Image 1 (cartoon, rainbow, N blue to C red):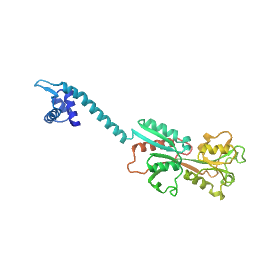
Image 2: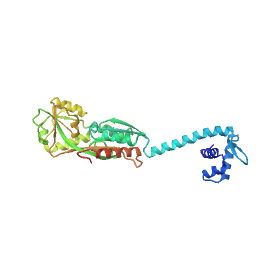
Image 3: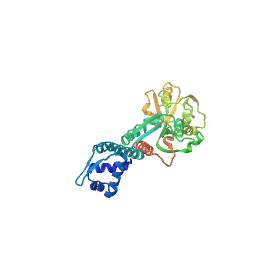
Image 4: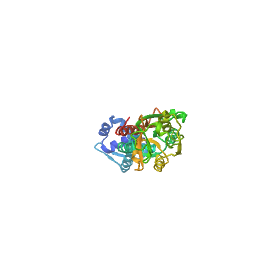
Length: 306
């Protein structure tokens, strides 16, 4: 029994007229009659009572009509679902993000994606940049939002990952409010490098650590690392306690308690949020849709959309 035969049968069962059913199917009547006869031989029982005046369904025909309708409808539903997968309207997406994206692009991209792709199950994972690149390569992450360019030396196979800058913002120094530099409009690298630094492990955040290193390189000195932490919230806790300073993205202002001052670095060095995803010729429509939402969310932000 073929799906085509069931479609032919349903057309005749709906019309109860071979001529009208053939016209509905855009075919001539003789081949349609042949297919119905073949179906009846296959099931071993007449499906229609035929006379010169009318065509009607037998009891077996009425039963098959009900079952065939469900089968054909289910097949159509599956075809629609498959088209939705191809078009990026259904499926699932796992996206990683650095914690600092919470204060810039992440709320907007999640809102846009869920409104535009309501049929896609979105899973969000807070991960460091290094963790995201590992997962992108082993296939457990579809797209990532990382902080700053990932050095190829830190991850030689990162060439298999496509990247795109989506948002850029200034680097700032976070200082205890009682520090002599806290009231300045900006602070030079020569001044800030003299302050004990709350830094981050390069193994997990090589892009950001290198970016901060580049920004401070003009000072010509060596950072005095007082503490090394993973999360910026932890860094701010040490700053508030008077342990030193930490260089962070300017969006960190949204986390700052009254005990901490935020002072821009002279020369306005910047840090970037970057979209990263596996480099494939057959990029999924779901990933492409997420990237489009990410660009749109970033474009809505100020002061420095890219």
